Image (cartoon, rainbow, N blue to C red):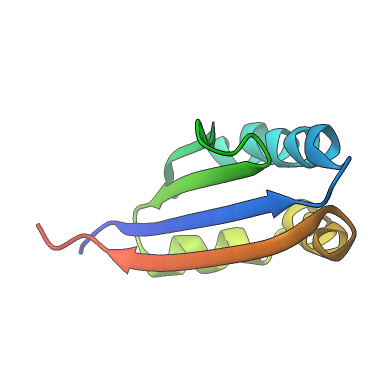
Length: 96
């Protein structure tokens, strides 16, 4: 089965950049402890310091779906409207 990838880009509201970075960073340790997580890394745009990209790699869509149901992720999702101006999520399956 092909790896399942999620690339999520978040652009913070004005004066919320540090708060967004901290909130995203808190997702990393518990996600990396999930059995189906292969990698989960946070990146900041060089062109726009308000934009962060989380690159997530899971063994399968089922593992990603498990991740999506975790309480810590649900709590983060509740914060999104107060921290971000935009969110773009792209989910993919590895071709090879």
